[in-house]
Amino acid sequence: MMITARSRAWIPHAILIAGLLIVLFPIYVAFVASSLDLSSILQAPMPLIPGRRLIQNYTEAISAGTAKTSGVSVARMMFNSLVMALVIAAGKIAISLPSAYAVVFFRFPLRKLAFWAIFVTLMLPVEVRIIPTYQIVSDMGLIDRYAGLSLPLIASATATLLFRQFFLTIPDELVEAAKIDGAGPLRFFIDTVIPLSATNIAALFVILFIFGWNQYLWPLLVTNTPSMTTIVIGIRQMIGNGDTQTEWQIVMATALLAIVPPVLVVLLMQRWFVKGLVESEK
Amino acid sequence: MDRRVVFSGWLLPVVLLLPQLAVTVIFFFWPAAQAIVQSVQGGDAFGLSTRFVGWDNFATVFADPNYVFAFAVTAFFSVAVAILALAPGLLLAVMADRVVKGATFYKTVLLLPYAIAPAIAGVLWMFIFNPSIGVVAAGLHRAGIDWNYLLNGKQAMLLVIAAAAWKQISYNFLFFLAGLQAIPASLLEASAIDGATPRRRFWTIVFPLLAPTSFFLIVVNIVYAFFDTFGVIHNVTQGGPDKATEILVYKVWYDGIVGLDLGGSAAQSVVLMAIVITLTAIQFRFIERRVHYA
Image (cartoon, rainbow over all chains, first blue to last red; front, side, top):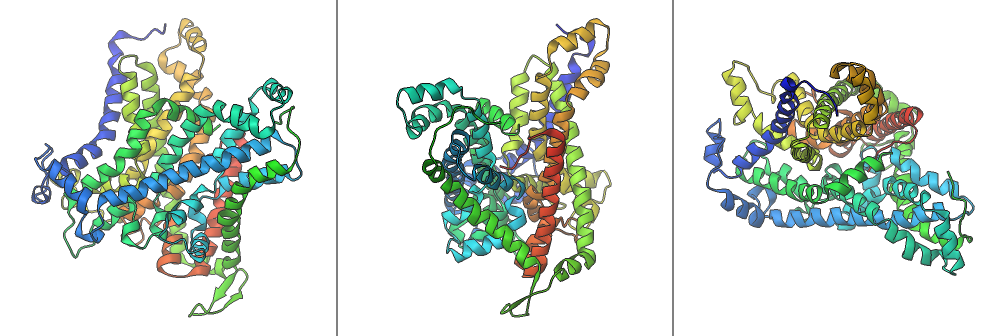
């Protein structure tokens, strides 16, 4: 046991509570604003106690959006974000499990080269090659399509590296046993390696889902049709540029709706998420 | 490191690799090569023809005082975001490591901003600091501070730094906490028996053992501030007022997409690539293989 002065035991709690307040305050204010009518928000400063229009505001946002979103509802935007996040998460996992398996469990010409080719993608986030990537996606006719939203973000090595690391820890005895039993490489991959990777897959899924859901620059570029807008982009469109009054109660309701899915994923899968995050960085 | 026991054959591994290699070539190598090609090309005013111009685009970019200014803005912004996200992250992790009661609760709440998009973090912060309706802005006005980040560049910078750092504290907190929990309790107990105060234990044992984690996080935070904060800037200030918060990524986007200056934007992309590669190389040089790019 560690010896700590009794009289000062409250200090960590005080600091942590201050931390919580800083984390929660902006979210709380957004929540309150999403329960008020616009005039209460505009009579600055707005009240800090929730109002009575919570359900009304959320219903309006979910079903209709605002005039500035060209009638696209937040439900539609959330659907777009969900598709994008799921395709990115599932797509990255689906292409990197087999590629990691290939580089770890086989010896073939140019294996090192293939590994490095995947590995260097770590270095160039989509932000630094946006315009050429945009041109390619545009040439392929994928603007305003889910494939265009997701595919370019699937090209990254994080998942491959994580799986490769895990595969290296699979005991040789398992591989030998499989060979003795007459199981081929594909059988071994499907029956042994994939089930063993379940925890890693879950952890990675959480991280990639959040990564996908929270994308900003790329969806901003490749979606022009209002009905393809993702929720994170949609909020931007709801905030006026001077000519019309921004409907802040709807903006804040939308902001909270945009936060809910990734927060839920983190909370429900906290154990895997923490493990996955810390381990994928090693 | 390689496995000792492997399967034979080359066709199956090639087939297994193909999907990822295809995606990587189409959406990674091809555009990266295009960026490099475009950075040495110039076009006519109508975009009908291109020709080789060598270093001209780079020369133009670096001769542009706005670009040099954006560089300075980015440097200041990234360092400030890194410090403001790292120091509280470390402090909170040390405290969370000490408490027993409520530890899970604190940890869960402190993790929340990780799930929030930088762009949304920007919207939340700009709402409370909005000069006409923000609750915090109202408090500042009452305290006699002339708060208007839409007009005052310094205040705009403070706001985007705060919003960007707020989102990143979670991440740092999580890694520092994992680092702290990996420190053997016996070391700390031995030191406590020798009579070292908690403060002394922190600076002589905990802090040095956290050095690899800290170094890794410094690089990750700078990369975050360089690239992932586009949404914060785009939502809160649009690079303004008067380019006071125009970071490099924002300028690449603005010059390329809004300004339609392909060559200039490509040259800027290539400069950014060089920066990321340098940062990643530094990271590798000092801490083996702890890289992050989801």
